[in-house]
Length: 214
Image (cartoon, rainbow, N blue to C red; front, side):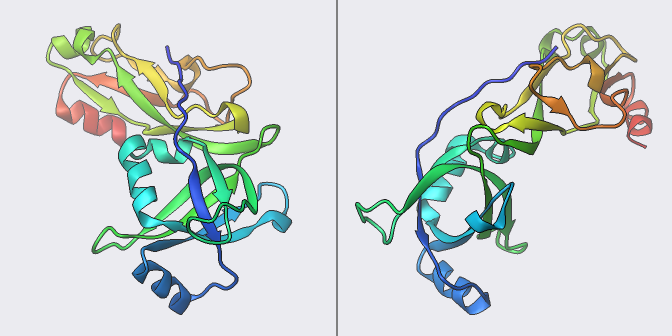
């Protein structure tokens, strides 16, 4: 009832920063850069303090869009300065968090984690519903209640699905899709103690959908 796909995006360029703090971050943002940290899933020895170019991150977000940004891996290259041909370090990273200014929406900080092949990462994979135009319940006037926006999986870093597609084309009014109905590749481990939790339901009225959410 579900599937995933993968895409490759351009390489993120970053510059090291030796110190952190509010004043340093403010100065970096004023110069068109975003304070960025890359964490290690296994050891603190590979934690990196960096800055990334605001223009490039915005271009990536325009291509990927949220929430898929935080379930898509990217190549990362660390260079000593903007435009430098010297490569200090490189690897693959997964975005964890985007911190934004609540008033302006401006990106304040980025948090990544190294996502090298052979490691496993916990990822909130977004759910995308398909088949709504063919859904019997919706064609009868029902409503699609999207109960879960994402599912958390333990994923091999080399096989993280940017999204999970859930097909609702056969659902009638009152029917649901549960976590255990979602079929994914065996190397993805669903991190839920109760896989009988519904992901969505076709309600007969808006009140019915409200009751499901409670």
